Amino acid sequence: MTERDLSQLIEEVKAGDHQAFELLMQRYLRSTYFFLFQLVRDGALAEDLTQETFLKVWRHITRFDQSKKFTTWLFTIAKRTAFDALRKKREILFADFAAEENNATLETVEDTQELPDVVIDQELTATELWNKIETLPSVYQVILTLHYQEELSLSEIATLLEISYNTIKSRHTRAIHLLRQAYQNRAASESPQVT
Amino acid sequence: MKTTLATLLRSTTPPAPPAGLADRIMKAMLEEEKKRAQQLRLFSLVGLSVSVILFLVGIGIWGQTLVQSEFWQVATLIISDFGVVLRFWDSLLLALLETFPALSFTLFLIPIFSFFLFLVMYTSVQSSTKFRSAVIYS
View 1 (cartoon, rainbow over the protein chains, first blue to last red):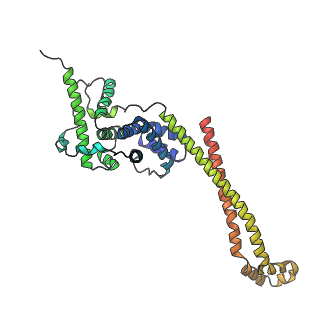
View 2: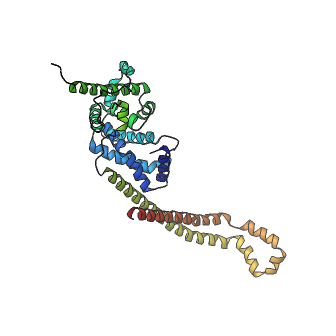
């Protein structure tokens, strides 16, 4: 969906078009659910929060400023909805977010390096990739999803999560490093053993 | 074929949410919309009723004020002595303007305005509900 299509769709939703809202919701349902699931780690709660998030989008879409990025607005609503729900449940959100503050040595890891040749089958790799991502701490999953799937910049993610840019950058690097490590380990284990 | 982690992350999609979530959201949204329309309809109907009552009360009060005012005495001259009206029409007009009970008349207009306001609200709720129902259930 191009930016122009999206802004037209948003205009239609603003005018009260249900079908446009359904299209918009279908477009962001997967990523919103996944984002919320990463935050709350509870499937049923993530479902409820996804519903609440989209209801809030429907209620307040007229307030959305088209000059701003829709995904940032949507994920801010989702995050606040999750925060409120967790506050009610008296759970501390992002408890594991603070654990990785001093990983400065990983800042130098490049994220554009090629994966080992073993990564060939895209379909298989996609499933494997998400399995691997799901083993990462929540904060890494959030950053990877928002950065690569929703094309939010690291600084936009920092604003959204209310965490400093340097921390987000460091965690992004660390996430990429962990993923690459997982692939390299897999490649090493699959290569023929010389006896 | 070689690929980078970044390309791979961009080309894949996260696992699908539970089936039926989209339908659940749409149902909840329509339910909320329906509830909101009902609230607005009720609000506008209450508004219309209150406006009609205030209008009737206003007519009584304004009528009473009008009859008791000097304006009425001056106005009755028009009927009783039309010749005087023709001779002193400018003075009479000025006297009518000066004695007109403007405050009570303004207060009397308020329920009329509010009646039309609530009428517009009611018709817009009705038409939008009908239109949306037609779209959804067609």
